[in-house]
Image 1 (cartoon, rainbow, N blue to C red):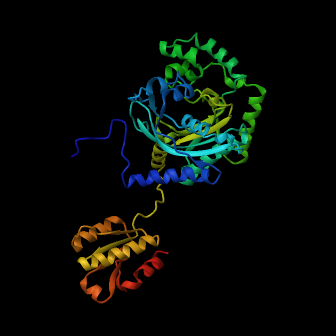
Image 2: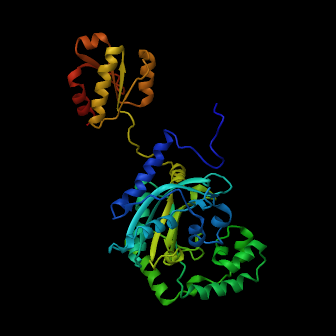
Image 3: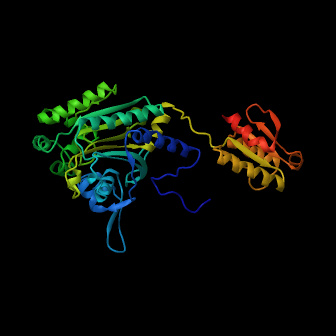
Length: 420
């Protein structure tokens, strides 16, 4: 038993479950790669101020959940709690927006960190795949990203998820709504922390999950009643594009998401089979974020989908992924000469693209065959001194149990033919 364990609220990805996570990452990223999105990878930590400015100083992420540290040189750093601010920072630093081909379309995959009360579906270390389209204001772009996420989930076999959609307005119409909402909220019976939030970011109060708070919000002013004509037209175009693409969504006027940088389009993917942690992903438009972190005006839109919660959603629906075979051929040598001969065969099989493994450690036939069975291999190669003297190996079909001698020189070609 090891002295050490994974930190509280974290997990280790180990076989065979890790194969599900890899398959989910591949499925989410596949539509992006086919749609002009290039891969980007950023550091696991950034300057604290990047998230304070971008995510918002009043958000729970910044005030309560960030892992921060001070370097020996005195720099204030934070483990990244989300991906958008980091990706936009990297794009600005590399001047990708000046290359003359907007939008800059990027996708990423990685680990993120938030100090939260651990529970199923909510971890202190979690994995996401995200996409960002930087530098263009176009409802078609918003619709594209929602459609690609929907496509990714459906390719995995998920069916019981819902897409929630809303508009948060822009810098022209949201201030008017903000003032009306603040006036309404100040008259409610709320705790001191929530009252402070009213003055800093009142829209976040609408996202409060407590039943006693939601009960008081029944008659709250509705943002849709305050949208300017431009925001209304933009939102209607997004809705029309989704409908035309056959993507089903639900209008949710209370959807605000948890980050300060969102404007206009905001959306969330939820799965009702996950209990309280029902959000499996989400995103929206963030037209002012670039300016918040010191860049030029670059209207942008993006999303992040949780790999952890997507796996849980698949389990909730009973979806079994068609995972690639880890081992197709397993070689069992009996004796030193056979070890050298079969290892050469295994190496040749691997170079030919066949998944092959080997009975390491000089185990006896019984133990090695147990390992072959556990590997899930379709075929097992067995050879001893007598086989090699005759220039053959024994090829066993692990499904039918049939075994036949195959010339050593022909065994690779034979296996390639059988495996297709």
